[in-house]
Image 1 (cartoon, rainbow, N blue to C red):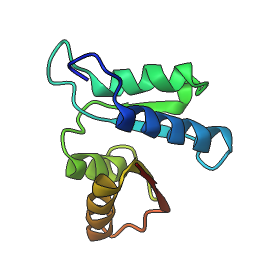
Image 2: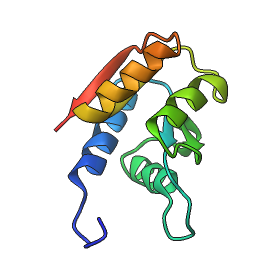
Image 3: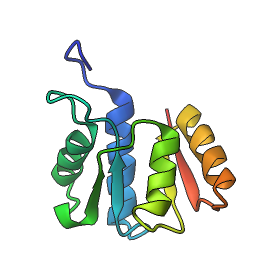
Image 4: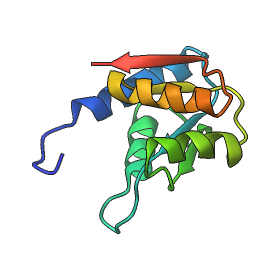
Length: 115
């Protein structure tokens, strides 16, 4: 966080994604987020944390244009050609992302509610 304390939401998302990958339930991880300034790059931060958690770099797909939940859901389908999706986030974001995914004629595999 900006005050230097660890962000529990971030680390719980990373742990959940790494655990799903290591268990073989997912084969790739799309990290989607904001990188609108030189000093702020959410996808890169997630990629580094996932690699530190044992996920190989070539299994992590970077989405630098996931500025909103809608952007991330649309891009997963249209840019990264995904037909199924596991959404890993806290409950509020999961509910919104699943709603948007269903509106896009998707059936998300599952959600991983955190905290």
